[in-house]
Image (cartoon, rainbow, N blue to C red; front, side):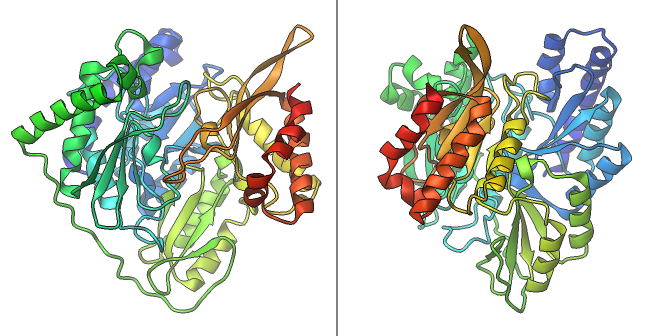
Length: 513
């Protein structure tokens, strides 16, 4: 990250400091503080006594130095709650007022920004966590994602957008960073160029991104990035926040073609001005390794003799003890670093076979099955916006499935959001849930709406179908019954569901009534 960006944000902390002091001493209303603190990556938690801080990890990359900073911060301030997010950031929770500013300031010394982590700002640019090491990828998009992120941060003070802007990259069919469902997405092609998508997004009234152009040179990415920003500035809705995301612009402008015209006008004006060409230099991995290792949590990299280990902390909430153990394990390992995925999974890459064994031992407390890698937001016990405690539901489901001895593969990775905002990406899960209420005998009871059949896979992207609400207490038994049904068929869930959708609907019906 460019030094001038870091220093500009360091100078900006005084405003955040004063607002934080006033709020946590009772001198500023919550809503007023939210309007200020969000821009600095911090929000008050539900009880109003503590706050959280979002550490932007550009493209999901976490260096050993940055992990060391996180670990030392947790120790120094005796913190116990960390959350990996679906935007490839790290949230620290239960912070006292003065701790928030201190950590935000200290993070800058390690190339970590919190500025723009919330509010109406360009958010963390996302990339595939295994970019550069995964067999079958088109090419490494990490350096491009880092350049786009730096550019967006450099113009943060120049722009006032109607709402947040999310940017993602893809270089593999799994589309793990949801590039085609973002406000702006870049999909790497086999020929070394990019396809560009825009005006997508999850949450209320979700939209898939529109394919704007195919096969552009990587040197042009900043032109398309700024064209997206300028189009949003000119045509975004500044009056109704509920319709202020980019996905509403095509309809507001009169349709997809009118939106394309508006976007291309901004693009052409920028190209005439010039000055936004990128010159990206890839940095190949030169480390080599010997030996082999086989484990369901180990992925062989395309670099011979090197491996990546995946670690999915339950609920996406790693314990400080495990993070400390992981840092102690890797701190002297050459070229090893962490990558964060959009499904709450952490990858430790560039390990030799022997190093991978050590990393496996340090991360034994994580998910062991596909179902346990399920995605969940932080939930209403912490989040002031949440309707339901998604973390409580996740853990109840895991406990029920374990107790019923459901075999691995009989249930898919599910996605749980505490409210319709899709922080748990429920709309693209094979099974997704978002929190709300269900009226039973004229009484509102805790419930989640069931979404079925979502996918972010390139070429087959679609949102799950809303099947209705299930009482929260009925979701674990529903999943157990589903897992038992699939297990009897002796095939994985993803194979079973393709020819048994009617059976799934019949199984779900009693729970939805």
